[in-house]
Amino acid sequence: MDFALSNDHVFLQDSAAKFVNEQVDLSPLLRPGADVSHAGYDRLWSQISELGWSAITVPEAYGGLGMSYIDLIMIIGETGRTLAPSPLFGTLAGAWAMQAAGSDRQKSEWLPKLSDGLKLALAMANENGSYDSTAPDVVAEPAKEGFKLKGAKSFVVDAASADAIVVSAMLDGRKDFFIVNSGAPGLDVEILEWRDITRQVCKITLSDVNAERLEESNDQVWPWVRDRLYLVLAAESAAGIKAVLDDAVDYAKERIAFGRPIGAFQAIKHQLANIAGVSEAAAALVQYAAWALSENDQRASLAAAMAQSYASEQYKQATHRNIQIFGAIGFTWEMKNHLYYKRARCNAELLGSPASQREQVVRILEHEAA
Image 1 (cartoon, rainbow, N blue to C red):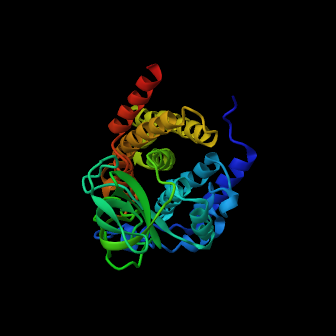
Image 2 (image 1 turned 45 degrees about the vertical axis):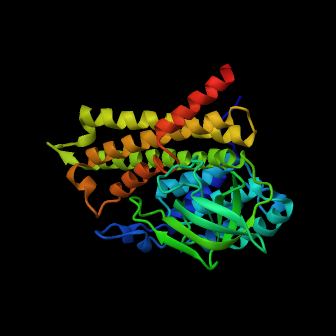
Image 3 (image 1 turned 60 degrees about the vertical axis):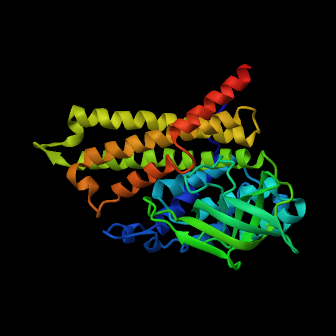
């Protein structure tokens, strides 16, 4: 089995790298008091949607590009490497929920709009950050036209930027999925003080908000979407590890101490070698998970959980080592090191901790053994 990237994959990656290198500017965030409102969050979106990134894995029948998850991680890796602020994560999440839970009519109505710049979000987590809770944090009730939603969801990525939000809600004792327009009366969106200021994370409150039920909602929708979101976070983290490694290597060559570049000292070499090792391992896990999801392999859920658990945890460690190599300057506002450190910490918690994903891996293996 050949896991080498094709020429097409490399070309896609290079094209994405060229775009983000030219367009992403983190300088407004490198000062005390900066928050996500200074990130230029929607500035790149028209170009991203024109490039088709938000619809890259959507089937061509619904206006997407119909490409593989290996193609997707070529792009996600570059946005993760540069911490590109945009509502791409939320839009991918919402689009996948529509793809998994929507009827043909609903998918034909909504998904082609991605190419025109439609921005989405997916509201799954409760106020404690749990994505699998069966508590009725949002309840759906039948109305004259469609449904009404009551309750609250938290940790909703990109909700403030979204044109529509896919919300999970309890209906007749089970969780179904509903579409809510961003301007709907009774919908309140609050941007949370999230540690990672390159990503917009929100709380939404719904008070008798009109909603349309996604007609094919079932218990398998969230696990299907979750596996793909694991892949996105893992791809961001693997690329982030490589970014902080390259940054630390460049600095270790330039910084002089005791008449020598600090990279000549064994203590620094060991730190760099450690990051290099985990970078290769994380990249391999991400590529395998992308292949498994693309091929609908029976190990896809296992591979996605393994990739997210390993890459996110090692990203935290790599950013910590990166700051150590830079020394005192590494945690000043003017340096971008702290932005990577914050992204790493948040990627390791957004869909549950690495430990929770390892528990999921164990459950999958136990089920296979049984």
